[in-house]
Image (cartoon, rainbow, N blue to C red; front, side):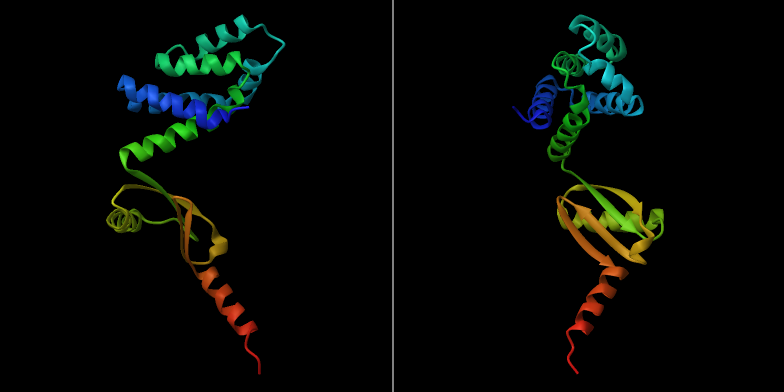
Length: 178
């Protein structure tokens, strides 16, 4: 069976690019993903074999009729194949391809307390200079790191947290023989 996330997400992006609608479809994917995330029972309804294909398609058409036609057609294909549950993954692939095309890097900065706007801006500027990409920072608060910052982007993690330093120090002490 094909990987729905990759195949449909990639196809959606390529069609959007061909149509010159990558921005519009990006916005519409977020809208549709939010609707489905906030109404998980609707996913079940669109994927249920209890309704005929025609009834499910009519429901999808009614709910998503205002979206870009290419995206609406994809949702109807997923509905027809009872794969609406995978829509979030399809959107993730689309967003990954969008970010790559637009030179955007999403960065998660994990800190013990919320970062100030000045701290985010300073980090963004440094990372943009380092990567050559437009940086979008999301700050996640995790008090267990005690202080410092842990950065995740492009499958990498840079751990500058106090907890990581203390753990490294504790490990080095364990190896000392007296």
